[in-house]
Image 1 (cartoon, rainbow, N blue to C red):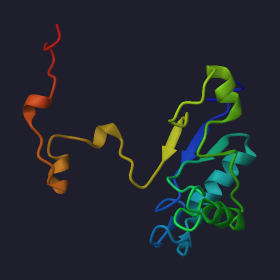
Image 2 (image 1 turned 45 degrees about the vertical axis):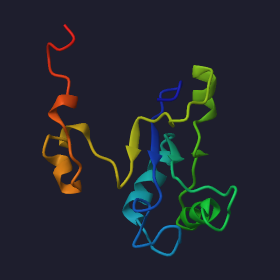
Image 3 (image 1 turned 90 degrees about the vertical axis):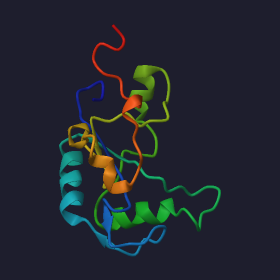
Length: 140
């Protein structure tokens, strides 16, 4: 939360605010239901941060951040920060950490920790060793 009690929402672009596009293009459909929710939250005073891997530097054609921001703006969604913490968070903590500070992270690649279980990663064919898990009592 911001020092004045407003929620901070970090939202991804590709696959979240835009659907049906092939990264790095910006040629899909806007996720209007989500965009409208975020617009409403900003009207209520909450903060929205665009949190994306897109950038305009050093290769503007390969990672078109400006195109993503313009796409959202055309749908009526603007941001309080883009790929960085809010100024009031930087001032409150005395630094600008690499991870954007937010109360909620909206991303098509995200999972709630409660969704993860031992069999979850089987779909990715990632070998997991039970020896890598710490069990209760290991550190006692």
